[in-house]
Image (cartoon, rainbow, N blue to C red; front, side):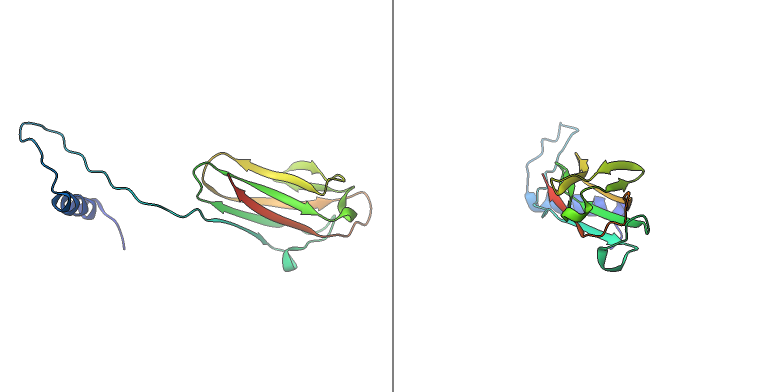
Length: 137
């Protein structure tokens, strides 16, 4: 359904009629409050790679993140120990992969929908697994 100014005015008029709020005829201001609950939805997808895996020093992929949480979210990468000496590159920023097995890929302080370019680099022929997850605040 396309929402236009005309439909918004109709909705506002219908809402005020249903609320039956007394309005003083001498006042020039009226207000309507509409409240509701929106569920928090956060999604994360990896594109341009087979089964969310891509080779070291090879393919690049796209990381698509979406989260409607007003307080924001963070994206975390968990990886196997075989990738400890590697580097994750996110939108040109190098993130070293160390023995901890986890790194924060992004930390966003508001609701957002972003697409990031990701790649893995290493000094040798590294092989391993990496998984991404999104965490609302």
